[in-house]
Image (cartoon, rainbow, N blue to C red):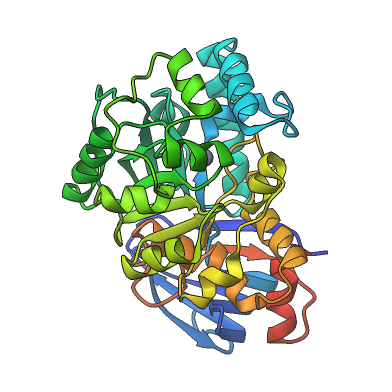
Length: 391
Ligand SMILES: [Zn+2]
């Protein structure tokens, strides 16, 4: 049994610090047994084999590895854990989620979310992409030592409170909810603003059958749902398209766009994502719970797309830990190698959020953010396998 027993997050202090462990995973393909990491001013100076000559902190016989990256979650829905049934149609799930959420007080949403954010850090998920629709994201993450991107998400055609901020720790960017719930002009505006701030833009895309039908013919239960929420879609230029082809036509795909889900996609859609170098984040457990379907990861990999992983919210998934997502994928996708899966939970997430110059591997010059897990692995292959199976 492997357990996360220590998380290291060095602060800038100007001193040289040495961290030793039985194993060090620099990246999925570069592993050192019996080595140490030299850290200066909060950055990695280098990783070396053997015993250090200087004074060092010995983490133990386990492994020091890059932090986990949860590239898509909604902390503000944490209070809804076990409150929204998964086994209904997607639209019923959305309806139930909105009702239950509005019955909760903001203070309770924030308290439940802060508890989950602290758990994420303890589990080694030191980087996140948190989606906030209620404008409480900052209140949730205030004072919590976590990194990544807080995405303020927009639905309909509301443009109030547009705000971006780029930092080396937790940046604030913008997200469009989805092709079927956010107006085309607002999606374009959000993309433009986040691009100008050199920050990623996030959007749920190709998740549900309702979405696919609505984008294709402007009809169906989603059209009724929008009408009931008084969202006027009469001017939206949809019809005869897949969700991916539609947002491609809007010009919002590209290397700094993160397409989340990619569940209902054609080969042509995958080709569009590959050609535009759009980043992809997958949430297979949430997809399985809500839609009884899994993304075609093998097809994405075949097109040289390097998917990141997210959990979505606790309203559609049991935990926010990326190790649990990796374990789930390991069981259901026998063709995916352990090394590829390890990259999905670490480096691919860093790339998806435009943070791979700071984290994703334990390479020289990156932030001294790493996690320690105990292990009884006897060789490198075994080591990676034990991590992705969450043992
Ligand atoms: Zn989501």
